[in-house]
Length: 326
Image 1 (cartoon, rainbow, N blue to C red):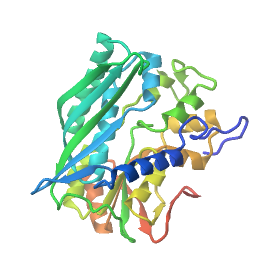
Image 2: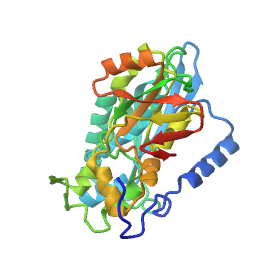
Image 3: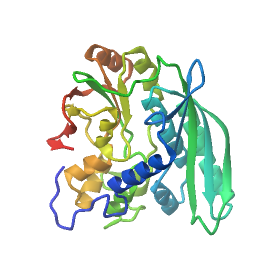
Image 4: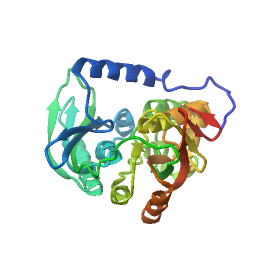
């Protein structure tokens, strides 16, 4: 996927999002409030099970929705980003609350957001139990959408969060760009195009519509992973494939990855983005990865239609994919 450097190659940091700086800020926050229980989700022991909580938003994907005046899918993204984090911990999502901040009330926009939330809740199999709409014209320009998802898990259902050397890695495809890296993607996509231009690979869709493709919700993988000896899982979000390091300090060898969807090739070409930057920023076609013994991995693959073994876990401290060491 290399490109000729006809223009200066874009990076995520140069377009406004520095992952290392973000992680440093998060570390400062954690240091101030104390340690959190859990990684992808915060955990509270309530006796016979754990209550898990996750919170996240849609990010700058909202700016694409604003440009197209189409907010009908961002609710799916909001629920997906939260529910998938719970699923990566072995937690069953059960309930969701949203927070919509706007500069001025707009019934049509609110209805669009609500439709997306309803669809996302159905796909995640969660109850929408409430939410908040805040009108803050001096704080918000346009709108922002975030939420929190609650889930439950027994001690046996929780993944311990640490892969083992020798584990197989089961991957499940993404539906596209999901809801991460949009700051870089938007900059690349609009260098020579508008969001309303036809997408070169599929002229029946616009570039904006392709960028708005909703995040896949991985609810269907949870039961097969619970039935197996799953050690850890990762939702491939901000930071791209380096997210696998959240399963422990190992070398993750990805020797049979899914092919990236055309949207990634478009972003890379238009932005002259390096291979390494692409894999450090985007999911590149794979949205969820689990680490488990090889025999269990094959069983999970048989039960999840589009899953497959994409690699393995070795001693070390890197992610090896398509000739890159991340």
